Length: 410
Image 1 (cartoon, one colour):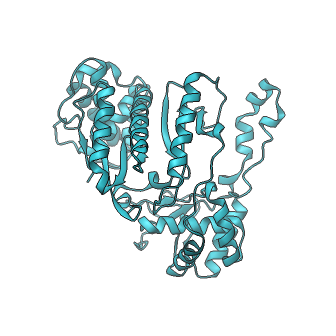
Image 2: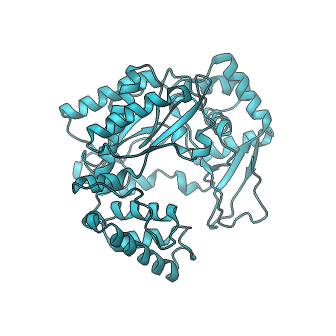
Image 3: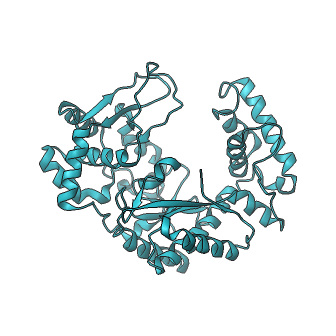
């Protein structure tokens, strides 16, 4: 695991992995509670640390600020909505009984006192890393011993109502009218989850939910509960084992630019992110995705100006000038789809790639192949690489994009 350097408190190039308490593993917490003589929250923290360490050397971030856990922020945000509904329960729902400032901090202190974690606290008001910890070998051995006795924790069967979610711009769940299509989405998610929860995945099993934004024509991607493999970097995902076998990952190349060109009946360039001018390809990719998702040029420019690859101090005047130049270059090179930039088209593209992912996942499930989705890329055992490629090609054909590339991320 990497050490935190002497410039602690400064913005970091390295990243952290967020603390993820996966409630679907709750039955497994009880076994850890007995061994560690601790509360459920502490056991959840220990288990999260174990799975993070299995595939990642990153520190696990958490907030030491009580304000982060204050559920009254939700109440204030929804007062007007609750008044309109005349439903006091809307603003008086129970806060989390596990993820609270007191319980998280007690859990960190408990594990620290037992020398089971290395803990580091960020200074208040400093931008960069959050407070974070990493497990010691002793904690990893303890959790591994419990897993050896009770097995790798399986995801609980989720409430079917939660498998299809609609969220507002603040991330709050909102109601939607049931249709034949939403019922179909739920049935498919239930089937996939029954398959995945029994899968032998080294990061632990998880369940999938489909999340839409604002309305049911926007978003709809599959998200793994608790983050699971989806919060890992590409290099870390390669360390995952499925059934004890190493994995491979296949990815659709430039999927959203390809969709944009398909919408106007054209084939995309061989590499949509190669726009010349010496621009960093990863920066171009981020900027182009931002342009497709933003509602205005100004919104996109401000976002791109904050990118650490912009070649200037992020959000500075120079960064804004460079961001403006980059976005104009993208518009110039991709003039045939210029009308789709700054039009919020990305949400529609997410729905289309979610439909492709649904086809890939269900196709592989019928073949008995465990497949872990990361939106427009997928993880399978290396021995199933060709099976995955065939399914992805068929999904692309059905989406009328037979020319799209499929690559193995490096």
